[in-house]
Length: 257
Image 1: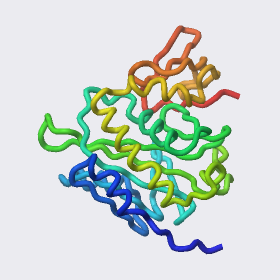
Image 2: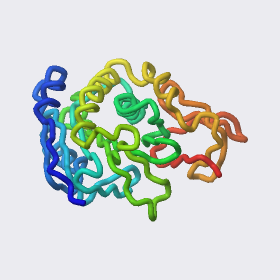
Image 3: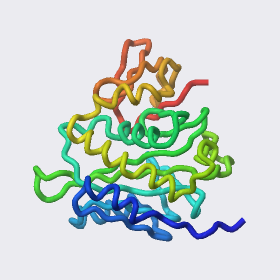
């Protein structure tokens, strides 16, 4: 069935966010390789104005660890938010993004450390955070926050985790409406993180933590029981060798069979 043309609320999003971010703009493109890749290209070229870039289709969308994220207009919401940030510590940033998106969506949306959104044991979406430096050492880093959400459930063939979709929770919302629901809370959360770090978000993350008290397997082959997150957002895993704090972005954590 053909999709009706999407009506993006660019002006409404701008009106909600512009008071928080001077120079903020909203761009909607019918197709691009990757919204994160594009904003990182701009950042490296010295363009650091705050921007929300939405793509109806990504030809080379990226997830964590280089995984591909494909989308068709209307079936997914894929966007990246670029803005300068200068927090005292970057630890826990992807968890803060997850908290902001989950809270803006629905109480049933849970968080799987460090950057996935799940519903009822199935993956709803993911987060990819990247940063780029400017010439001045003490200048804020350009931060690019990419979010991909299934609006309609995609085929599950070939996926390690069965997919979930927003329309299971909020059938009245299309991709533009979900964007309007998320944008301002996400910006506010990022600014709060810049000021106070991850600690104020810790309890909010743990309220949606899907790994808590679950046996998990780390990518190095060790196993243990997840015990929430540390003050800096690291995953606490009780292993045979004692409590371990997992920080590495190269660690893949999943519930053990």
